[in-house]
Image (cartoon, rainbow, N blue to C red):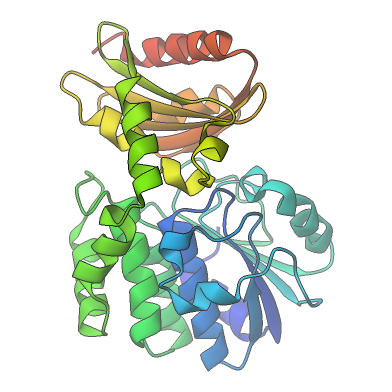
Length: 322
């Protein structure tokens, strides 16, 4: 693995770069991408962010994200992946990344224990959010932490740390948060945009989904299901499911929570959360996914009950000593 100093030296030599957040983007991957895009502009490096899907509306208060594209619009020298443990996490953009990897400078900056070190240059360090790693890079690049960068970094910190409630939060996490606030980011606005603001349609969708949570394995495993067509019925996008998996985790006696989003008929995007007594990274890895000990994801195919049974067995294997 490369040091952050080596990564900074590689980035500084670039004249242009495309930044790849992971698919189904959350606040950490988008905060990383926005902060890095803004930082490269200070260095005179042409860059753009590309995402498989539209940026979820709640993140558009971050101005660097409003310039994101669905496909690269120029032939860049470098491809920079942020918060993606493997190239499958890039979704349909994976093929573009892999084709470019043959002749371009590829960089992978991530904080997942399951990261596969798939780029030419890799910096992987576990932290509460990958924005902590991006902050290290920006310091090495000697760019100013202006208000826009601070807002992007705070977004990642708040979302991936569970509002600073996860057990991987450290003093470094809080010191970076303080630096972001001192640089102009607002904790109040960040929490409102990301955690509190909801449309009526999203509130009604949320209520329907939460009402139908199933509790398996003697109440230790909570399963929320979003069947195919549900989001369309409410005129919502996939980002409306944010927070559902965490709700299940907060129910008394639950050790593992899952949200199953049926994005296509028979295709389920699985989000997993643990309260600390089960390793959901291992659960996700069973099905080709990954993430963290307490937060991970994967994709499963089949009929709903078949998918639920597979998950129940994998979770049970990690709960036998609980």
